[in-house]
Image 1: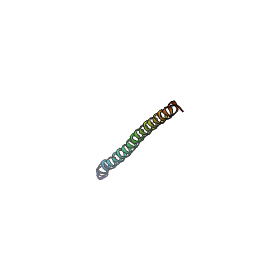
Image 2: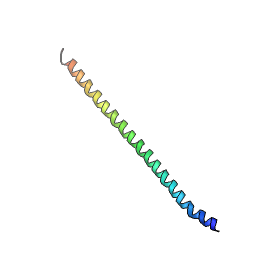
Image 3: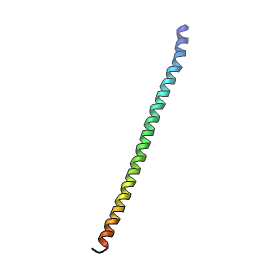
Length: 66
């Protein structure tokens, strides 16, 4: 009887610890993935804007009569 009581007292703590660790790991992975997606989208957008800007500058330079 003492052993069962002891185990039942010990188990919730272990499960709590595991769920805490799982939540922590899941949150870190989720945030990292989200940040990476946001950053790559931002960088792609910036690159496209820069590319379009440079193309328009080059086109203006060549079409302005050299």
